[in-house]
Length: 59
Image 1 (cartoon, one colour):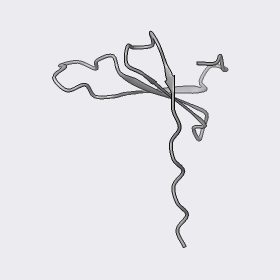
Image 2 (cartoon, helix red, strand yellow; image 1 turned 90 degrees about the vertical axis):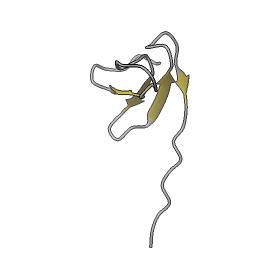
Image 3 (cartoon, rainbow, N blue to C red; image 1 turned 90 degrees about the horizontal axis):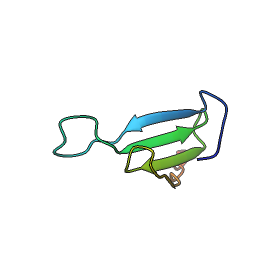
Image 4 (cartoon, rainbow, N blue to C red; image 1 turned 30 degrees about the vertical axis):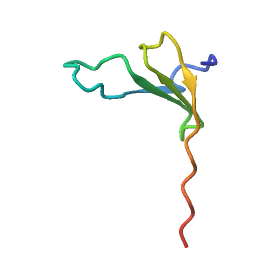
């Protein structure tokens, strides 16, 4: 993930079935509202950027 000022990123736990604790999977967003999205399956050992589709406008 690119370096950003403190507080730019927010962390969310992705539930891991069969694990009695938080597990290692995380989604990290950057910005408010978020403009960057990352997934880590190994508790920050590696990250994969992804995009979230924009919601459709309603009339």
